[in-house]
Length: 104
Image 1 (cartoon, one colour):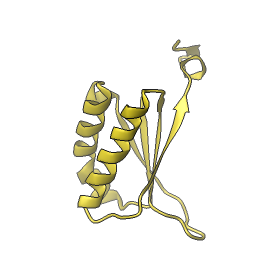
Image 2: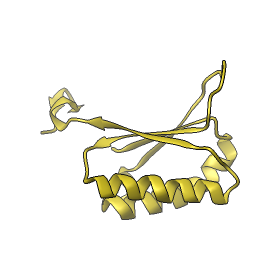
Image 3: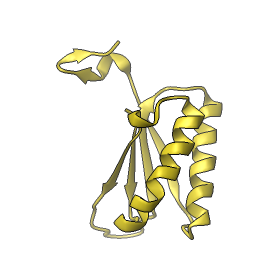
């Protein structure tokens, strides 16, 4: 936890970027690198689908979310990706379960 889900990005390039993404994300959020999960979602584009990064995590201060979006967008733009949509899905600790028990 947290999960970063990428859609529309090539697998090989995302694998190469993963260490830098994990470094940046864990530094901003102040969590151990081992907790950052990265997934590449395979989907079939039907119409007008931009590159997206969906971030599932617990609520942080707005400044933390802003910094994550800014740094992640900058890192991806440096690799030639543009018009990236980044959005957060905020999870509740009382509704996040490990081994059948809420973590809160």
